[in-house]
Length: 165
Image (tube, rainbow, N blue to C red; front, side, top):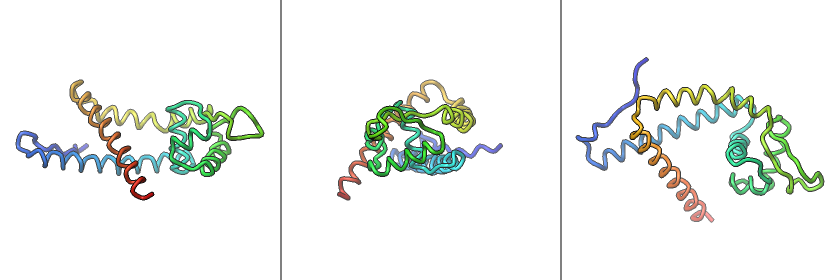
């Protein structure tokens, strides 16, 4: 299998060239991640917003619908529709007050755990293989950079929303 990674020789690069190369690689990663999430949503038989909400529930644990709406950036009405679809597909369960669905806790189901494992196990294995050649120090630098980029993206999203509003 041909190695398609491109490495910019850092000792020959100007700092702005290295940053441009890193930003280009980030765009490639983002595009590939979007394609991966599209394929995962298709495999689950749901849409991307639904998959995003499942990911939030998986990461944060059981939540009330209002908190899930806040975490996902979706409106309360949209969350109600997402939860109805996810419940119908068997990926979540709701517990609590039957008469007021907003007070109920939402959690992922056993079915979701099985589908998640079958869907993401090979993805994690491929990512692990891609990272395996890196040293512990390189992995620490990569982790810090990705964490900083994620925060930069969250800040940028807030600014874009504030400018639009």
